[in-house]
Image (cartoon, rainbow, N blue to C red; front, side, top):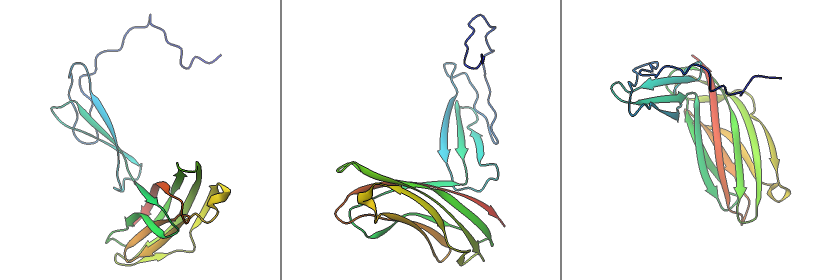
Length: 181
C-alpha cells in the first residue's frame, strides 16, 4: 500500500518559514505567519519555463510560468478572428509554437477543442513559416465549420479562430513556445 497522502499528526512539526528567496528578491515573513504566493503567465523566454520573484520586505512571492500566452475572444459568425498575436521580436531565430484552443456555445451547449503546432523562423523583421501548421480538432457536429489557424503577419505569428454563422462561441487559448537564437 502506498504511503502517499497519509497524514501523521504525531510527526514533529516543520519550523516556521520566515524567508523564501526567489530567482530575484525574496519575501520575508511573518505576515501573520503567511507568505502569499501568486501565479502569473509570461511570454518571457526562460528555457526551463518557470521563474520566481520575491518582493523584498513584503510577504509576496510571484511564481511565473514563462514561454506562454493566453487569449480569449467571442465570435458570433464565421469571420476569421485573431485570438492571439505573438511577436517574435527583433532577434533572428527559430520558434516552435504549440498549444490548444477551446470553444463553447452556452446558448446551444456545443463546443470544440483544438491543438496546434507550427515552426517559424525570423530574421528579426519578417516571419517565415517553416512548412504548414499541424492541428487536431475535436468538435460537435454542428460546429463542423469551426476551426483554428496559425498565420504570419510581419514579425508576428497570429493564432486565429473561425466561428460558425449565427452561433455565439466563447474561445479560450493557450500558446506556448520554445526558441533558439
